[in-house]
Image (cartoon, rainbow, N blue to C red):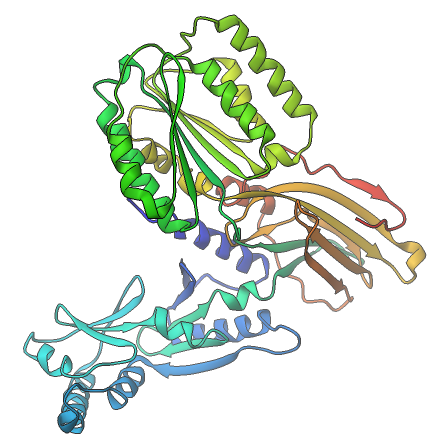
Length: 503
């Protein structure tokens, strides 16, 4: 199963941010791979222009990141020169031999390929492998007839630098910390001589505490032939969740004629989870409404973040169907009239296998800004992945309060706006609502989470000579369509006042 970090979405998000900030990416390819941001330039000149733009963009507290300009050959030579050897008496001999051979390879021309966290150079013959393998390197390894340079480990020790690897195919490497440390970017679009539209891009941090995950599984008689595939999906998905969030807790519940909790599991008892999930048997009818009601009741009483995934292949067959339906309707109404924190912090995905679901379940999912996914596969992890929802379901979600004070020449001219929005805490930048401002005004942006903790308190002064960039059309909507962040269905309700009030 794929790792739950969705680098494709990170890449789309990064491209949108950089374009909104006015960087020219036409001749540069951008890829985000975990904590690495990789720019592939067409020529050295284009890469050089890009890295200077990045250096200015990433200036923090009046300090720009340093540019470390090297070639791949220089990196490899440095690794060879500082390599160690198990036989200390042969260390210098092996170093000189490897340097001599690499010098010959360099004169013949070096091509490389990027493979996840490595830059790879194919050795012209397998015979070279044992020679280079005689040494132990800091960032290099020799595997399958290739020299592999580990850019992941290299960037870990160069987090505050922009790395320019010059050559035939220039690369610019940046650690994501350079962007994350900024916390906020202000994209500006000039509307007229006096007015600028400002869109803040805020870094939504990763959740410190993972949500509690709930698998709620239909094990009614109709699932008998497909149950082994469901069991396999649960086990593989749980394993991926424990890799994604090592401190996570996974609850597994089954339902047929009644609802029964199978158990709660952590990474340390994954084998127990596997054994008990594999012991599930298919039998009986489908007590769907009662099961949904119990899950909803649990969420409404919980103070934790809960991500529920309910999988079913049928519709409700409960003996007290009318009673359960009415109770579910009332509880959904109570949820919608209550604290916005509950629907913001919890998710209720429904996977419907080979069937459609009644309106009441659509209302339940919608109340938590979650989908009903209809699928032809009992592998619900695959169903989520096909819809691009795997990362979205796995991420914790939080409700944020955004407050923007705009001050003119005097504090008497201050205008304030406050709204709430819900975002997945996935360690990415997200655009906030754009705001029109006049030249020489000052923006004061404050963002707090659902616990009242201040995540950002930042001021931005607008001057008439501000460098203004072109925003992508529909910036906020585009990010949402990409699936990078999932706000509650329009909860960005603004409260405008003429004087600031404390949050």
